Length: 482
Image 1 (tube, rainbow, N blue to C red):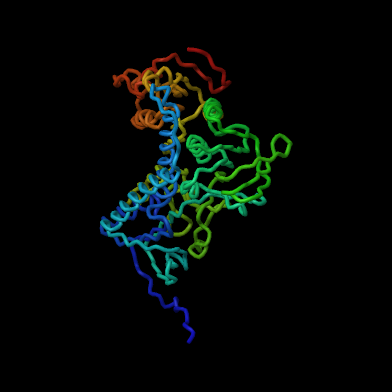
Image 2 (cartoon, rainbow, N blue to C red):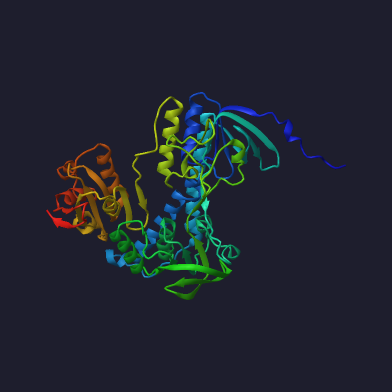
């Protein structure tokens, strides 16, 4: 007897006050918060409990990066008077340490869902109509849910460019790279953005030969030239082969075994061989297959969900947050999206415009920035005073043997801090101190005259703002000492 498929048209929708699709940073905090306030909340998650950050992105990658830093200390042991004749890296142990951390983080998320009273539904959610969703469950069954409000937070995934042979070579993305149990002999990285740079340094320190191909003329081409130059010098000093102005045109072989990449550089066609490929060329929004048109939700030409400054989509009572909404691709920005939705659902009028967007590139040393950069200031014709010192002027770096880099700040005529950049050890922590001063609208003199503990890295801010500034005119971009 043939078993007939279930008649899903007879499914009775489960009714909720809020249905959230995708359990990333902003979405999960919104679900937990409103559920704890007594609302009926459903969370639909396809795969990653808690989103990408604790599973396959921010935290796991920093776990691997720290292991690589420990390896670099071992390699430099003689510099600190410690004799280590030889050492080896057990990549499976490195990855297992990461896996242990991820499991602990997932367990925390499970407890939060249980304690908040959020209904967690694992499956692929897609719209059947306005505010009506069907969820394809792993066992083949289906559920239908409807909500007074819907929030879409499905995030993004690694983009694999349509280069001949690339997809067929089964390249690594950051997901697979974080699951390696064997160290690549020669890792070729396509893309010199945050992910490419962090993995390049980490895998080199763990023992791989690394080649990085970047299609632009400089690394971090959107940043100030001194930042780009600093990163380029760092990678060179660590033995990473960087090929700039390089556009990949073809790939043969299989990643994990043997691959050959053909690339165009300076009007010439060249090839390079390796054992593994890591693709790090950007992100694609997870909006395909969701039936957004059935809900009246429009997307941009790149597939991101169209939202206004309140994160409202083109459909009534449907919202989007995080990367899928085109927000800057940082977990801390997704968390702020949560605050905006939470407050606006309670009658507020918060918006995404005008907020600070700090970032940290977790190379070693780090690159951290908040506010206005010199490049942007010059483009906008904004005059500023530039305070800049080498990291070696921060005496704590000398005790650590970590003197590479610099810190700099842009200060307006009224003494307010316009922007801050640091390329140096623990740069993110130093930057956060300046950001707090900017949030409090403190003049730079408040940091200059502060009594900060000696010797700490943050004390370097006193040295920075005591230094002689350079005046940069927004009208002609000529710099004069003041």
